Image (cartoon, chains in turn orange, brown):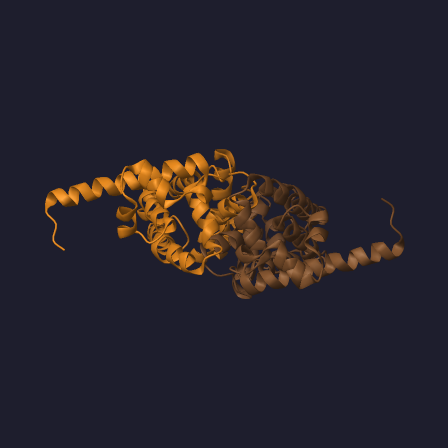
Length: 210
Length: 210
């Protein structure tokens, strides 16, 4: 099926209208009440237009999130690792908040009951971002900001974990001060006490420098 | 309404039959397909018996989980803090696994869409267990196994977070080796680098971090 540039432009503007309508309706009424009919009406397109591109509302929300989670796709690298991690986590907090009307938490809830959607969520949205996160940490290792033998799977677990624990159990997202503290704790956890450090402390205590 | 001992016994056996039927049906078909009708049929009781005690299937599952998460209610204290934390987290892993048919993940998914159920989940199931967890950590602080100024909210975030992150995004639960590593990292994170190097080294040898 060949389309000229005008058709492509029209399609892109319909696509954006559909994603915007999906986000708005979800934030107004929650993911549970979201329907393809309502999205079509709000976006001013026919239901068939939506079904031509997406098989379900979950697929629409997946694409919406793919478009929203931009920092996680290309993590910042300002040279300040802790600041960049706080920036990344702050994006996730925004995406997961408020818990009951966030498109992301709605999709997570549905995927907990739907293995196919869970597969798509992990493969299309999450895994590429985990790869980008680890690449960012490897650059930090190369730059000597993170120890070369730090376990990047542990880093992923400890940095992102708290946000999803708090989401799942309705404990409230960390405020900026607590987020600072979390990142600082995790960076400390990833920095093993080096034999050099022990030698350094021993030398200091011998020379009376504290 | 006064009831004799026989009535109380019959009630308790109905209650246990209802909870067992709820767990079995959930693990067979998933939380989404669970209905009060199906629970009543499997438990051999009338629907009205269930509705007399619980307003919804979410409430039944909440009571089921309250009965299942026993270690979290009274955390072990063997004197080995890392081992006790691994025991606690292993109970949670069992409760959240397999993700698509666990009653707990089904309830979490529903609560993400239902603020009232979220409130009950947090108030009745989670908050008392968080209090018990912190009490266990305070005993560890008193026993000198955990630094007196360790931030217990950070400890909660970092220890439980990874399990819920992995649940929400379908990343698979940590195996025992990775769980060991997570606990060791978190205990290291909670141990601030003190000028007193001797105290620092003694704590590290206790937590098994090298």
